[in-house]
Length: 140
Image 1 (spheres, rainbow, N blue to C red):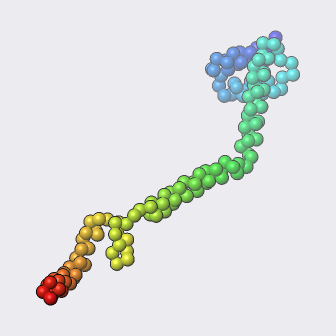
Image 2: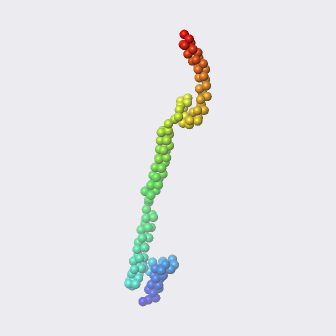
Image 3: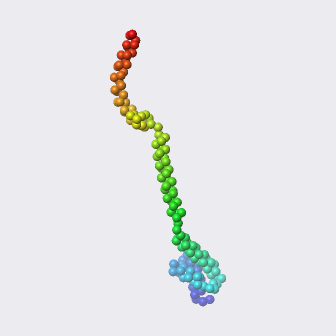
């Protein structure tokens, strides 16, 4: 066994023990990419690094793909939420029943409606004339 192969086996052991540095990992990757004849003791590591390189390649290809659907979905979600909020405001306004109408304007608050009874004081003048008519009818 030559020195290079012994070094790679030691680096592989360090890598499997999670003690390898980034530079040592790069050295392992480069060796496995270039190695033509890999001993049986390193076949598992070669397959593992080959799989990791394949995943990295797929990931880099995915990164450059345009993602129209990924950008449009959040916009549809925002639009749907806005439509629901607008619909709630419209439905609440349509389903709300007024307490009364004053001068053709719907009044929803009972307190506001009761404060406008000032308008009815002018009808008290009709009450006196109504009594006079009732007395005239009884006396005749």
